[in-house]
Image (cartoon, rainbow, N blue to C red; front, top):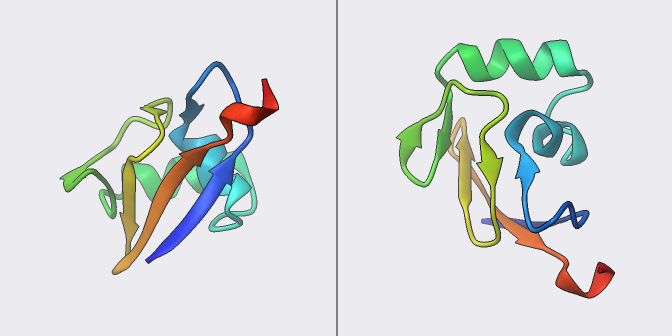
Length: 76
């Protein structure tokens, strides 16, 4: 299980931006296709909305890899 600190964006980050931040995808278009394919899970449920707001502690799972979202509150 990995953990990634996302840049502070008022305590959330959109799913597509998080996937790019973690270098799981290389572009927004690639993120869109991956998310719409139904292979991305957020907190145990399939998520198909690329603008889904992720918050600290959310679990993202892709192909068996789990990433925990960590929002850096110190960056405020």
